[in-house]
Length: 201
Image 1 (tube, helix red, strand yellow):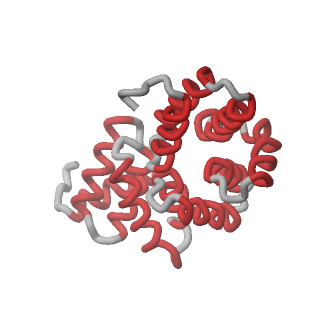
Image 2 (cartoon, rainbow, N blue to C red):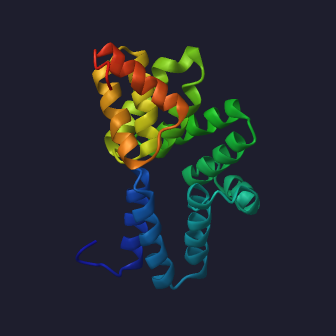
Image 3 (tube, one colour):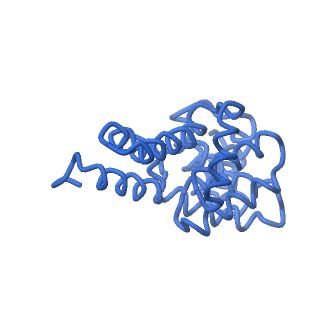
């Protein structure tokens, strides 16, 4: 990429390489550069579709992208950006089971994809049958997304449930430095500190 910084093929492949490991923001910037450099209309449309599908996590404009998501899945049922977008739509509508299936499908395509790991961990956390899976997924995702406060809070709460009180307190205190904790997170932080005999805290 450094030797051919403006080569459209390199930009396109590098964008997908970044996306596959969860570097969504970097992938979007590279795809924008590719769209400006691409000289074929079809390739430009692919870039536009990619940018539309990946914008759902940033803007939450679920209704506006729904037709694009449906068309993308029809064209390629294995498209991870389309699977992620459709799962987000289903999750917002309250259809957790179908959303879980799509996030799992995305992980079969990109096994180390932290955005799917994160979302699946969040959905699994509320299901006692999948709580261990939620913890494993959260650990994997957090190793690649250490600054994600939603993920840090989730892993802190799950760590408490796994009797890892010191790690739970550490994660929740780090989260508190970045944003105000909600009641659930405060409860888990307080319980973790109590287990550590930090009673004044």
